[in-house]
Image 1 (cartoon, one colour):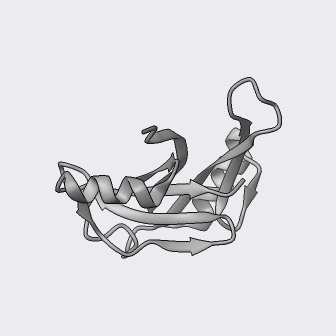
Image 2 (tube, rainbow, N blue to C red):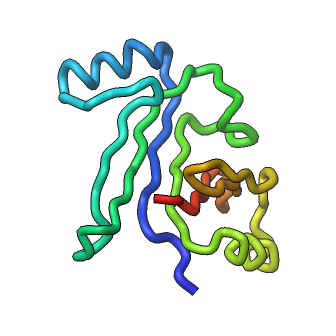
Length: 125
């Protein structure tokens, strides 16, 4: 079973997310939006399978990364999230919350071996 297919996003804490987003736009040319920046790319040689990776700064006091105490969280793109969650549960991996479904995909959070919160995303591209 194929598990991770790519990086879906990089999220980090900072003192002022708006100023951080503006800095990256001004100095590194990121095309920013209210959520940070979105990088579009194609999966492999098939130019019809567009995908994206999200870059998002969060306020340093955000609770979104809890129960992890780390200042970052990585989102991994996956295939067949429901089956993957069943497999992870059998392997004793900590599942933080319930799967949520939106018009752009399914999400769930897990903890890795060192307590880093990891977001898993089955995208609807």
